[in-house]
Structures are given as C-alpha cells and as structure tokens.
Length: 76
Image (cartoon, one colour):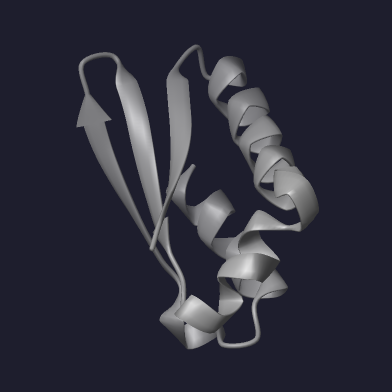
C-alpha cells in the first residue's frame, strides 16, 4: 500500500526525489504518511482536495481487498 501511494505521488509532483511515504501500524489500522516538497503540496492536494480524495479512494479499495484498514495522512 505504501508503494502504491508513493508511485502515484511521484507521478503527480515536479520533484519526485522529495516524495517519502512511511507506513505505521496503529491498532488495527495502517497509517501511511506522505511527505512531499513544499512546492508540490498543491499538486498532491488538488483543487478542493480532489486529488487527495482520489488517492484515498484508491488506497481504501486496495486495503478493503486485503481485509485491512488504511488511511492516508499528508504531512507538511
């Protein structure tokens, strides 16, 4: 799941070398924290958060398929 988020983020940003995704387990949920360059934050979030919502939807679909819970946190 971490790799999926990282791959999508690298395709969206101008500086893919600054993309970092870390995976943490909290209780029964996987938390994926995404960090990008400050200049690329707008590209990841998108207009009215549409891009971030789309990435979260994909993450939810993959995690549901594996019978797991996962959430995405975009860290500044």
